[in-house]
Image 1 (cartoon, helix red, strand yellow):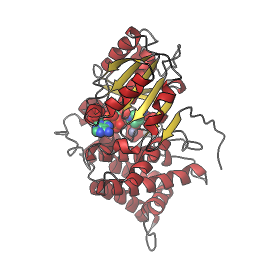
Image 2 (cartoon, rainbow, N blue to C red):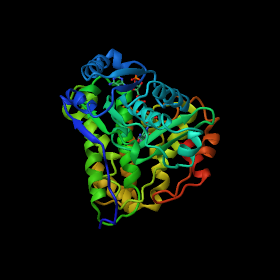
Image 3 (cartoon, protein in one colour):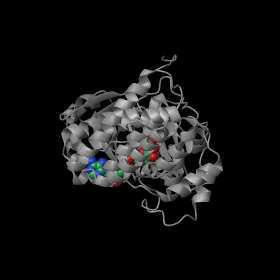
Length: 389
Ligand code: NZQ
Ligand code: ZN
């Protein structure tokens, strides 16, 4: 049964090989001043910067560059962007990049119109904006986060060592240009990081009640199988358009809200990873991969039938002659094997964390949510981090 729900996704997605040609049409809906937000330089190396500038020029826009958005964008960078957006009177923020650039652009859209302590109001107290944030548009260059089609902006406050998000409907990109070919140049490490992020977003929703027959679970399983298959294909051939296009759409759908009806949702793996990111600035998806097997082994006793279903329907585990617990565990073993075989980081050590000295501190700062099937204690978070080391 589908429980009562509300679904709204306002992002206009333009997807495909010629998607970038449609940028001028989208730009025409906004005023002449555009803040062009991008990362550390990949768009210069790939030639995308020139193509976007050309579209902006042909559309008669006055462009102010906002370069240097780092992976895991910082609150300082958001404030810098907010000042720049005000100074140039931006009518639109155009984010060209992956999740970090798009997230930063969303937070800048807020910072450009709101005054005072944004961190406390929007990120810690999760209040909604009082003024309409600037509109943002996205040209997606790396898949994983789903930021191109959701209202989340994840930001790291370096001063307080806290990574967290603000969310609002007004922060959804107005449009997202999604050309899978733009992801061909993503380094393999970032590509598999993004792939695991997609899988993790789906698992965070899937491993939670309701467990009774509902379409969300069926859709989730189909997308997970596609991500697993497509990641292997993209590893074999980075220019495999079929694989790249499936991954790109899977990434957008995973956090679009489509899979959420009837689901309580979990998000505890993300809470743990956000604090790993706040302390060690690691690739988001790789942090998720390093802790997921230990996390799921910890909650397995609270949801054996769900993990059995995952094993059989997602990983093709044959349940014949095995107990439910054995089948359930085989599913998590298959997930761990997939992490290793896809050249993801299977441990925190592989992620570059030198020793276990700060794990207790990290465990103490993780937000403990209600959880899908089980609410973790701090001792369990620490045990998961140690088991993942
Ligand atoms: O900075 P540049 O030079 O552009 O290089 C980037 C960056 O170094 C590179 N890259 C991106 N596209 C490329 C490319 N290199 C070559 N060719 C291309 N086409 O990839 C590196 C990583 O980019 P980044 O944007 O940091 O990766 P990702 O998309 O994984 O974003 C991660 C951030 O998103 C947040 C994460 O916490 C993290 O801060 N998340 C956002 C979410 C959301 N908005 O809903 C949800 C997620 O759970 C996540 O928390
Ligand atoms: Zn994520």
